[in-house]
Image (cartoon, rainbow, N blue to C red):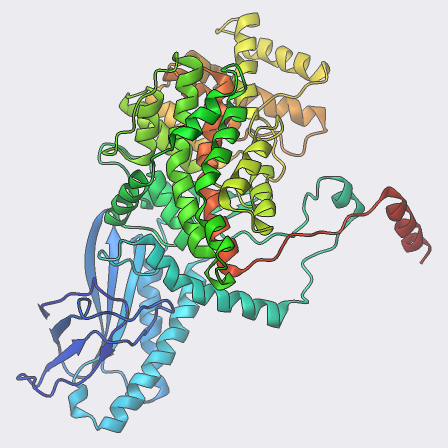
Length: 606
C-alpha cells in the first residue's frame, strides 16, 4: 500500500473524480469537493482546505478509509474489501465487514469514513455517475444503521463511539455552531410537524402537587439524566468524558473548556480547539470597575451568593443581546448576541467569584488573572490556591458540576427566565438565586458543616456504630442527612464516585475523607430501614466539601459560589440553543385544589 500526499484533516466532504492526467493507470486522484458522503454537517471546503491525494491499489477494490484515534495518537486504517460486484445490490455486502471491524475494534473514536472505488477511469461516464450516487446513499444508510447499533454500546472498551470529524484547523467555536444550527432547526421542525401530537406520558395529581417529579415537559439538549446511570453530557458519561476530553499537560482531569465545547457542539474537541477556546475565554475576562463597586456596596458579611448574584446583575450592563434586541435584530439571529453574552459571562464569573472570596476571607487582597492558565487552574489561582492538585480538583469540580439536565431548580430557572427573552445575565442571575436554596446548591455547604459537627461531638476516630447512632439522632430530630438522596437518581451519583476516586488517589489518609467513606457504608442502610427515602445513596454534595477543605478552601459558606461558576457552562450552553432553536415562552397550566378535587371526583364517577 502506497500513500502519496495523504491529507484528510482539512475537510469531511470529498468527491471522487477521474484525473485524466493520471500517469499511472492504477492511480486515481481525488480532490476535496463539496460532496458529503457521511457527515450531515459537512461544510463546503474553501480553497485552503482542498487537498489532493493519490492511492495505489489493485483495481476495482472498494476501500474504507477510517480516521480513528487511540489514546492521544491518530492513525489511519485501511480495510480491503476486494472485488465487489459493481452496480448491483452486492455492493451492500462490504458494510457487514465494516460493521464487524468497528464492533470488535478496541479503538475509542471513529472520526471519519470515506468509501471510494479505484480505477473508475476505466468505466463510462454514466456508470461512474450512477455508481457515486449509489455509493453516497448506501453509505449514508449503512452508516446510520451502524451508528445506531454501535451507539447503544456504553463501554468504550468494546465499542466505537461515533462522532463527527473534528478538523485540526477548525478552531472557532462559533463557526462550528453556525454549521450545526440549521440542521438542528430542521430537525426540531420535523419533530414538531410529524410527531407533535405524540403523548409522552400521563400527568397525575401526585406530579402536580409533588414538584412535577417524573413529568416530562422540557427540552434540554446539553445533558440527560438517567435514574440508574446518572448524567450523560451529550451522550458521554463522566468516566467517558474523563477518558476522551483533553486534559492539562500536567494533569489527568478534563479541562472545563473541553466540556463547554462538547456541550455546545456535541463533539469531542481536539487539544488545539480547547486551547483556542481557553484563549478566547481569557480575552473576554475583563470585569468593569462598576461591577466591583456594586459588590462593595454590600456588607462584607452578606452571603457570598447574594454578592455573586449582584455581581452578575451588574455585568448585565454590557449585554450584547439587550443592545441587539433594542436595535431590532431579526429573531433568526437571536442566538448570535446570546452566544457573545454567554461566553463573556462564562469568562467573567470566575473573576467575580474570586473577588468575592478574597473580599470576604482574605482582607480584600485580590489576585489578578493569569491568562497563561486554563479556566479551572486560573480560577484556583485567583482564589489563592496554586497547589497543582488543587488546580486539578478545580478542573474536575467545574466539569462535573456544569450541567445536570434541565429539570433542576437552577437550570430550569435559567431556561424559564430566558424563555421571556431576558438576556443571559438576567437569566443566570435568576438561576443563581435558585441555586442558593438549601434544597439545591446550598446543600454542599450543609454537608461539610454536618460532618464537622460529627467530628466535634464524637471525634475523628468515630466507629461505625457511633456514626450510626449519630445518623439516627439527626433523623429523629426532624432533620435530614445532607448529601444523601436525589430527586431523580436511584443509585450512587457518578459525580460522587469520581470525587471519591480523586480522594483515593490524592488524599486517602485525610480524616474527613475517611469519615465520608464510613458514612457511605452507614447511611444508606439506615435510610433504607427508615423506609421513607426512595434514594438512600450519596449525591454530588456528599463529597465535594471534604475535597475542598483538604486543600485549604475551608469556608463552607462559599461553596455554592463554586457550584454557580460551574453551572454557568451548562445553563449558558442551553440558553444559546434555546435562542438558536427559537424555543417558545414557557407557560404551563396551573390549577387550584378546588379544580383538582372536582376533576378527580368526575374521573372517579365516570
